[in-house]
Length: 266
Image (tube, rainbow, N blue to C red; front, side):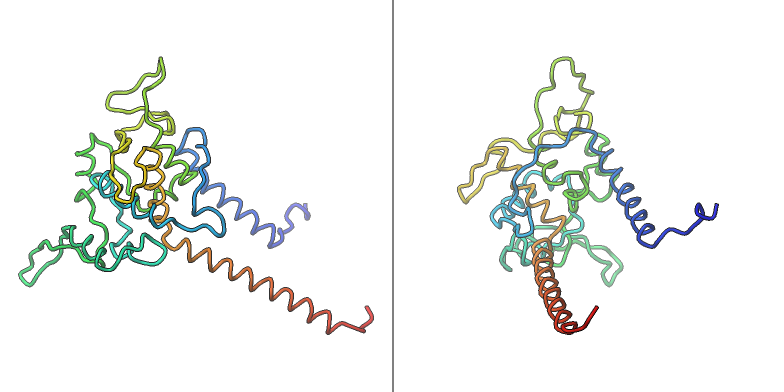
């Protein structure tokens, strides 16, 4: 009995806690998908040295504004983020112009009234609906998810988003599609309320990049990954620098220890 009640070591306790947290955190993502894992894609931001393609980020933002912003909010992004290092890196004048196109409700003023004004770079992206109920009413009861962190909120992140955007099509023979739903091979149970948002040529590019569906899906997915983790490039650089420091420190400690113990009998 004594051995049964013996306290576990700190390492065992830590390992158990970590395993529990990982298992708990993985359950919602797996349950939310309910479909086969999407095909792995090659992304410029993959790997320890991965970076964002600036052109893809700017094109992805254009797709978001023209094809997604009428339904989906991005409440965790501010307009000034579009000009910060590591992102689309629009110029200062461009960021101000983008923000000014938005209408922001502000106040109260000196009379206690709310008022509207053009957006400023410091403002967060304006949501298309004033509240969730209004969003549901405009979308047949379905609530369009906020896209700020959607790339991290879904299992397989960018691969899943790409598969979802390119997964629309006609249902196979014998498949019963519920009223108001659309068939999507990548979505859970293959039925999604959102109509197909992108198609060949849906958005025009000024840089000569092809506008087929797969290219559009790649560009907007790249933008959504950046939105979910705008400091990704800085984090990778910091991690690489830390690894170099640790390697140098390990070497220094090894040779210092070797020098100190030289001639000492063990």
